[in-house]
Image (tube, rainbow, N blue to C red; front, side, top):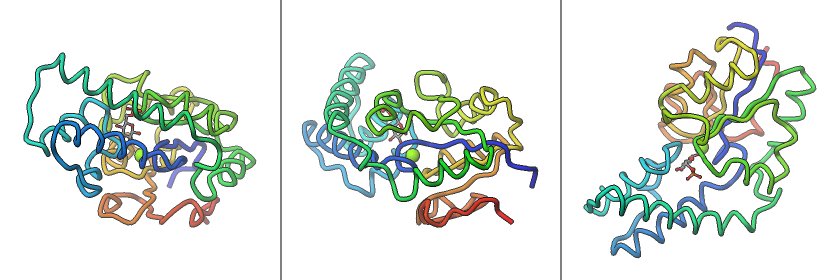
Length: 213
Ligand code: BG6
Ligand code: MG
C-alpha cells in the first residue's frame, strides 16, 4: 500500500447518525403516498442522491410521476428531513469519531468530507464537526452521484493528494464502489454485505487503528 496522506469521510452513517432521519422522512412520504417503506427497503437508499432515492422509493410503491411532481415530492421530504436536523447537536456524532479525527490530524493526515448530501454544511455546523476538515465536497459540488468516483477524486484534488494516497470511510455499497473506482483504499463501517469489496471492514470507528502497521 502507498503511504496514506489523506482521509476522505462520507458523512451520513459514518460520522453522524443522520441515516435514521433520512429514513423517517422517506417513510413519512411513503405513508402519505399510501404504502409502507421498511428499514430493509431503506438500505438501498444509503449513499444514493436525493432524486435517485426518490426513484427507488417510488418503485417500491409501484408508483410513477412526472418530473415536476417528483421535484415537489423530493422538496417535501427534504423539508421534513431539515426539520429533524434543526434539533441535532454533537450528541449525534457516531462512536469515537471525534477522537479518530483528532488523532489522524495529529498524525499529519489531511482530512475531507466526501458526501452526496446537499445538507452537509448544516450538519457540520450543528454537530461542530466543521473544525476538523481541510476540505468539504458534497452534493452541491458534484454532478455525478456515487458510485461515480467524482466526489472522492475532487476531494483528493482539493487536498493536493494523489488518489493512491487516500483512504475512504464509507457505510454504503455505492460509496465503497466509488472509492475503489477512484483507486483509493476503501474502509467499510458496518456489518452488511455492502462491505464485501472493501479493502478493510470495521464495525465502527472504535475498531479503527492508525497507522496500520
Ligand atoms: C447521502 C445519504 O449521504 O446523502 C443518502 O446516504 C441521501 O441517504 C444523500 O439521499 C443525499 O442527501 P440530501 O441531504 O442531499 O438529501
Ligand atoms: Mg453514508
